[in-house]
Length: 69
Image 1 (cartoon, rainbow, N blue to C red):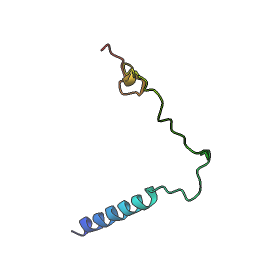
Image 2 (tube, helix red, strand yellow):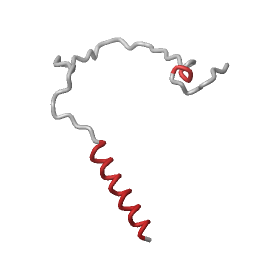
Image 3 (cartoon, one colour):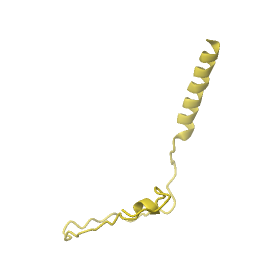
Image 4 (cartoon, rainbow, N blue to C red):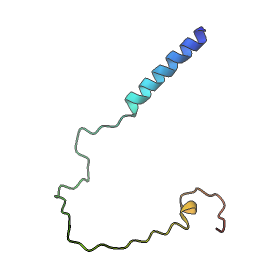
């Protein structure tokens, strides 16, 4: 029973440390950010976009051996 209690204490401590140390916050401005004001063109004509995903498995390493689909 004591082993279980110590395991839970260690697990809780690890979870708290992970939560505290895993959070990212930037108090200063991020370098490389733009200072220009954003301008949106609401009168622009719509465009068509074509996405080709035929080789996405190979590119991202989701398939170790390329196969014909």
